[in-house]
Every structure is written in C-alpha cells, then in structure tokens.
Image (cartoon, rainbow, N blue to C red; front, side):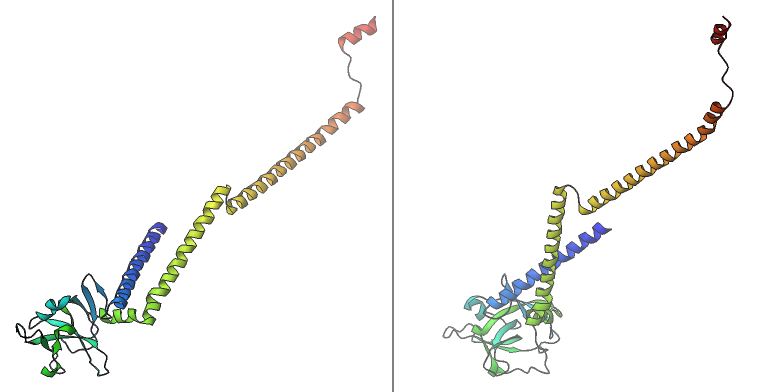
Length: 261
C-alpha cells in the first residue's frame, strides 16, 4: 500500500511538472510573439474577452487560431471565415486583438490595387451591427479560427499569464517540489553513508541493548549457581559432624588379625 501511494504521488508530481513546463512554454511564446499571444507550431491560443460572438463562442473561451504568414494568405480569405485581427477597440490608440466573422470582402481579385479589406461582424446581433466604416485591412489580420474552442480555458490562461497566477500556480508549487526532491536526495545520501559505515545508529543502539541484556542474564545465572552450591554445602554439614562425635569406626579384618598375633 505504501509503495502504491508513493508511485501515485510521483505520477501526480511529474504530471504537474509537465503542466508547468507547458505553461512556461506558452508564457515564453506569448512574450516572444509580436501579437502577445501564445503560438506553437503555427497555432495561436486566443482568449475571448467579450460575448460579441455569442453563441458561437463566449467570454472566457479559448480559440485555436491558425496563424497566417505572408500577404497571400491574408488577402484570400473568404466570407464566413472567423478571423482574429488587430483593432483599436477602446479608442486609446493601442491595437488589441478581436475575433469576428467576415461578412463581406472588398477589392478581392482587383488587378489595379492590392488593397484588400474585410467587413467583419460579431455573431451577437444585439451588440454588433454591420459597420462598413470599420473594415479590417488584410495586413491587420493575425489568423483564422480553426473551429476548435475550449470552453472556459481562456480565463484560466489569462490567470496563468498574470503575475499572481504565475506565482501561485507555477512558482510556489515548483519550489515546494524541488525542496521535497532535495530532501529525498539528502536522505538517500545519508542512508548510503550509514550503510558504508557498517550499521545505522538505530542498529547500534539495538546491539548495545542486547549486549546489556546478555550481560545481566549471565550475571543472574552465575548468582543462581552460587546460591545452589552454598545450599548443598549446608546440607552435608550435619552428617560430617556425626561421624566425628560418634563411636570409632569398626576395624577391618586385616587390622583384627594383626592385633591377635
């Protein structure tokens, strides 16, 4: 049972290590990306921040978006594609990422101009009316949605990318894991040294205890033997006294014949 628990604990720990490694890779990828989103093998992870595309996907979902490279891919998107693009959503002069559906394509296929723009709209009709003035230039398109979404994981990714989330979910558990592993290594080294020395401290104490018990046993046996010998001598004393105080012992036949002569 103890061995099974140890194996289970090790499996959980290593799964956590793998999770931490993946998270760190995503964080580093996000920092290295010019768009500020994690990108691995041509796939970007986009966390949805609003319900403008509801019910297709909603705030907190995570989209898998295929990154687009070069102008050719960006210029030949089609109506119905859900694209992620750069746009100044809050009017602060800084571009953010937005994901909407293409409802119209402008200038596609025109030979006299290479300017292609897309009219986009969120699937949530209550909050996203069509607005031609906000057409998206092809150069601002980051990627196209693959159709895969992970419900709720966008919020998790946002938390992991925050300073607090990274500290609580990654740094502290990793520190605790490495401290535990260091303790195990030190314990193994101490155990090996004790084996090389011959016996452990516990074994040494056990040997001392048994030696004391054996000494006491021998002392008790010797004392018991001495007491038995003394009792035997005391029992033979009256018989010797009677022989000394009684009549002389009878003469042997050889002694009687000598006296007669």
